Length: 97
Image 1 (cartoon, helix red, strand yellow):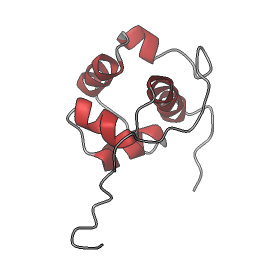
Image 2 (image 1 turned 120 degrees about the vertical axis):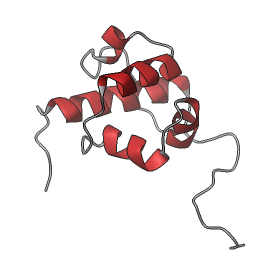
Image 3 (image 1 turned 60 degrees about the vertical axis):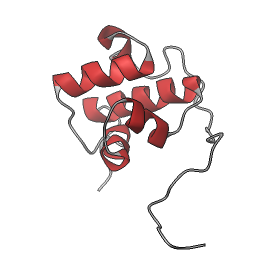
Image 4 (image 1 turned 135 degrees about the vertical axis):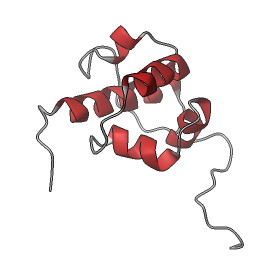
């Protein structure tokens, strides 16, 4: 079931993705910087998770912005471009090759 675009979780997720994209980092890289699981970060970005205030502070620091900047509406300064990692990214498929 799709969440409405006015849902604050969806708006926050879009903003986090926007800021991450502006930095040119992948979800996995942001997850590592913020000591979060990539799957949890993915759920935040898609609006399916409701992060705590502590998680917002950690994400803001990892993105190099204030919590206030993190809570700005999407589109405040983003481009929405796709990001590709400079190094190979683990997809959790050990032993395949």
